[in-house]
Length: 249
Length: 242
Image (cartoon, rainbow over all chains, first blue to last red; front, side, top):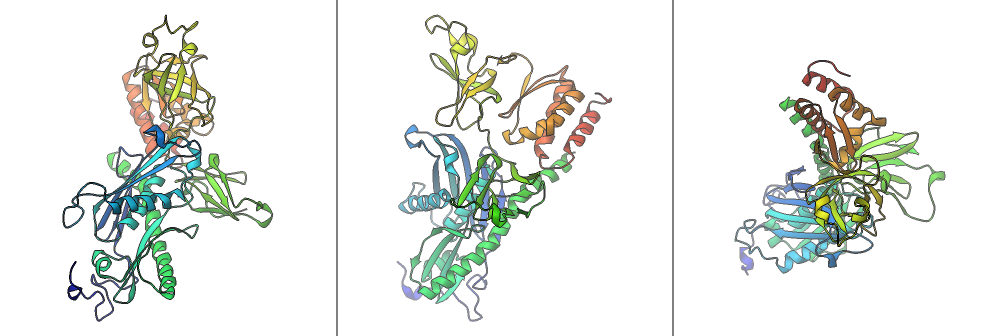
């Protein structure tokens, strides 16, 4: 444990954050869809320095058979951090944290995917964190839902993840690693923007009722922005195909 | 029903397509799902469940998926690859979430497992043109090769295409397929699971056909594609045909 005195100042005098963002400002977000040829669906999502790749396989015959269910498809999610994704090498073995995040992301996606259409099969979602700088689970959820859509798997809505934090007493959107480490609270939220539903909700730290309400408002606003980019990314895949076609001709 | 999108517009999962009038709202169930049309109705709104193109026909709205996989249906004509051999059946990969079963008694008359060697009829890796006899999602699809022209594919070429693009390769009332067969003079059998079986007069026509199919795959979401494919094929094959 580092000593508290070494905690950096997270909100500057001008009200901006360590990386110069305003409290309600997202990091630059880049999303691309359909980038892996071998996967049925894939997406790469970047929230600033956080980079997450998601790949979807299936629905396919469930292996081992024992995981298959007679009434719906088994959704399997593996959230994994690459050994090189963090500053200090991370052991590639799944940690407690990764198992937990795989579970919460799976539950978020289960709320959206029409699994009952494909009984006895499995839909496998692999979320690989390539570079971690805070908000990997939320970026992972966004990537996973886009990869599912790219695989053509019927689902109610896309899911968008965003983390709200409280640093130096101020609520901020899309926290990075430093703000997560030294902040007072971290609230990752997964939102299905069209349905207006929350599919993932965790809170680490303490928020008052008022703060929570405000944080939810901020999350919905931020989700709307990310959702717009996600929609564009799905659309761009088809536009890009056309451009490539023109070039080769 | 107030429709919010245009015909052939690209939509994504969760995009609202239409708002129902008061008298159209069905009481009781909150969510009504129409898997074949790729839409679902929640309260008074109609949503898409996939990435696809909107199709509005006679006041009915549906989404044609741009991505996806083949879902077996009874009576579909499919082309599969034999992937495994059992004692009384073959396992056939039909690019679906489920492996298909082709019973030996269907292919061999008076089948007797003690006498007949299944490998002599269909071996692993062989392509087979078959019809789906039964499928109900609770059990794996069962194929049949009883029918005209069905059975092992011994000549020509099998072209693999994305299953979601098959409707576009056939076209409205078979218009695209007619262009392909008339201009290339190839005999084409379309497996609905994403395989084309082509018998062409020569390699030149086959290559032209493959190029045309790839063009359809990449531009499946464009209008006026049938005409474009026709011009494309005529430019490759030189003289005007058909």
